Image (cartoon, rainbow, N blue to C red; front, side, top):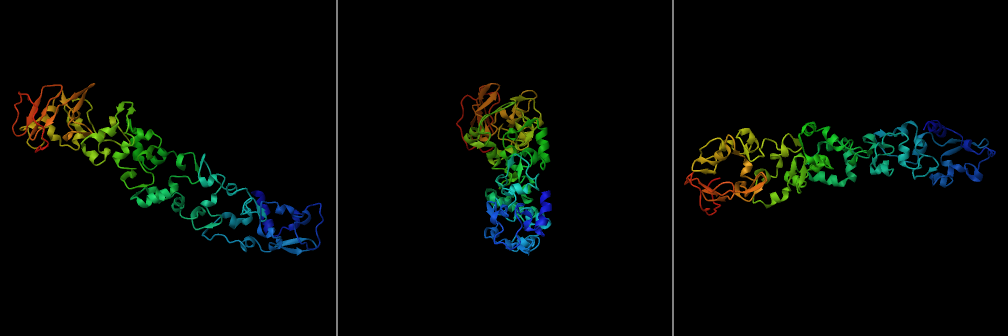
Length: 458
């Protein structure tokens, strides 16, 4: 380009046309009909696409005889005025530097070229990179860049927008990326960076990261979501979804959605998109959740509102199964209220703290609180999972048909009556309870009462 910076002013402001005349020829001393006859200035027409005046033999459109005897010429107009007499360029408040400093000939050949715009290079990208050599960095290139189409996004001469963009940045991107444009129109929640421009997250030219992200996805998201970064990096139990291809966008939409936290679907649907198969983890297998939640007649409360995050950490946590609070996974445990922290965050802990009640629970024999009897023990207190399903079940109150006990699956043999129930587990003899007519504590039930779903209490 240094050679051009010397040559261009000479061409614009008076270099004699005869300068390029073949040394073996004598300079004409009279006017000639054609500047390219007999090999004179033949190189000026040696291009794939010729400038219009040259095609028509109209050299005088740009060059005026100064002295026919000496065969010298002057330009018909000076500087950019020569080009702009015929060519109209874009209007705008921002002007490309070559237009104001060195003139049109820094980018265009006045006689012709390989392109319709007579560029001095084989294509637009090659020309732009002569100055903007560091603009494209990355093995993955934006399609307009890969095809040499810088002008798909940028104006060549002037624009009202920064970086000579054709329009405001986000609008420019959405002109091509119409799927995201439609989604933004239809969504109630738009990712905040979208309001500041797509280049908050994406490189417009090239990147080493997928989707032309400025950095790897997790690193990029963490640059704003520092609290999530802390949760992920400090997690003793990591969420596997963050290690899968897609990372954050396995669960979140990066642009816009109609759901809080930019989730791709309801929390339940997002979770079941992965938990629809058995998953092996360092601490054991997680079962396929699809049949568990689709076959039960009764869903656990958080599932009825499609929100797994009521019980589970989403990004990683300190407890097994990403639970947000303590929940004993064993069958027996000495009773301590904090061991039931997760369940008691919704359910009244008093049902396991008082031995007699007529209000706190329907699981009672008269006023004898059977939750207290089962749970509040110094050594072998039964945990919630001893009798209840966690996600869904066929019975009301998620009473289990079978409960795990080591490698066994023990049948509960539970039946419900209008005012109580009947339990015939595999581990002890049958007992019944009744809220209105208490069954004798020492006398086991001998026959299962008929099941009745019209119980008057919980």
